[in-house]
Image (cartoon, rainbow, N blue to C red; front, side):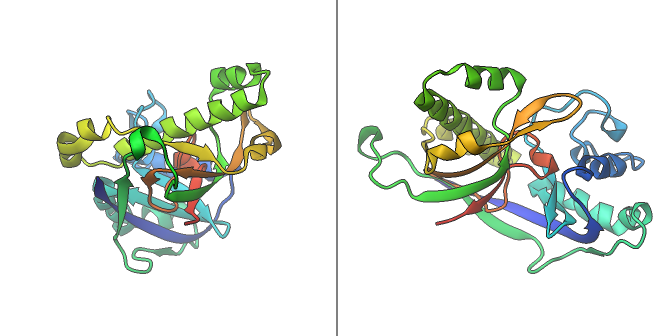
Length: 246
């Protein structure tokens, strides 16, 4: 079972890193009449109640500069932002490219059912997740509570599976959700870490709100995902991007 996801990216020369990308998003979110998709909150400027849905616009860092990617129905909103010249007004000397490479691109999301009643001799898709944040504060406390190392591994795999499910449903447009979401919900998501030692090497990051653990994980799954899509927490701010290995 599969469906198509469309993406469009604005490529800029605006210097960006994980310390300032949230400020950049807030700056763009404060543009008058900017759609909620640009800040994922339910009012102007991204200061209201958080919208609990997979973000349709991602702010990412590519070669130390800002890249903004829109998915599906948010593509038209991103084009409108580009054509307004607001980014150039807000970020002096900014250069913005509307159509990198082939412009609007299409990617497949494919869900492969488990074979042999749940056994899997070859899990087909392998990925590397960069800066993946699997837990909120409460979940991190649960993770630390496991005295058995394999219990921690299983918990990370469980969170990965849930985050992949969140991405799959979040990338569906309304028409697809109405036709295949119920069917997809009955297909188990299989996740297996390829380097279980990586979870113990993950650094702790501290900010004014929380302490989080950030992982770089290789994993296999039965879900084909678009490369560079993001999973986990803070995906709208460049965290959790995945790279398809095979």
